Length: 269
Image 1 (tube, rainbow, N blue to C red):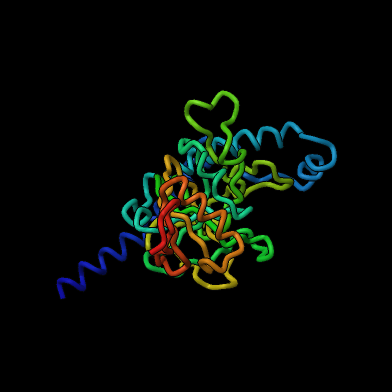
Image 2: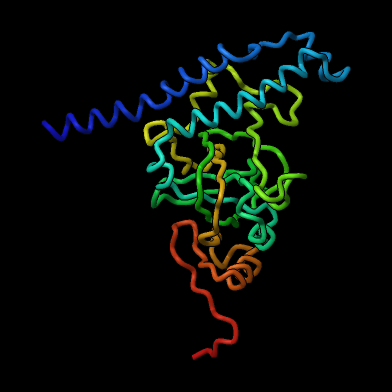
């Protein structure tokens, strides 16, 4: 009975993290900013006639709200749970070499997987554009969602001007509306707020074949392994193998099993 009560208390603590964060974000929005509402006419002027003053002000507040939301997320997220997930940044080209030269101070995005789960690539959503090659990384989770965050602000390979020393920050497109033609989600009551991952209770495993990708923003990251779905049958295997050898990284398949690497200049027996 005692164990049951302890488990129940733990469940309550986990499930309340999101609601606590939502309440804090709602208060921040109410206390410090112009509301997220923007009229249809302002939106129309934005698209067809450039920025209106109201829209420009809205965007400025949106960026500030994003910073507040990330601070609230950091405060309320279950760090032990986030650290238990496996994170993979999927290569668009199938060649992980360029990504491995990126500065780890630059924030990057990744799909998150439950421990010991089978890897499936969901990003990009068009399977014909999927290389099925990725880089497993670990680092500090800045933000996470069960849905695509539409993260913006440049690539993982170059720092923004003036931020070379500290690395650049990836903006959450659905919050700050960076580079989109419609407002991002800023309202704490928006259903997409419920996509945020704070703990095990709010995490939705993405093992289904037709599931859309989740997205986590990772800072101060480091590569752990190169993931090759399909192993040696993957058409990009040779590129992945070369990158693994040059960076002294292991190769693993979709089941997290190691793929043996023949070392250069090794004499066959």
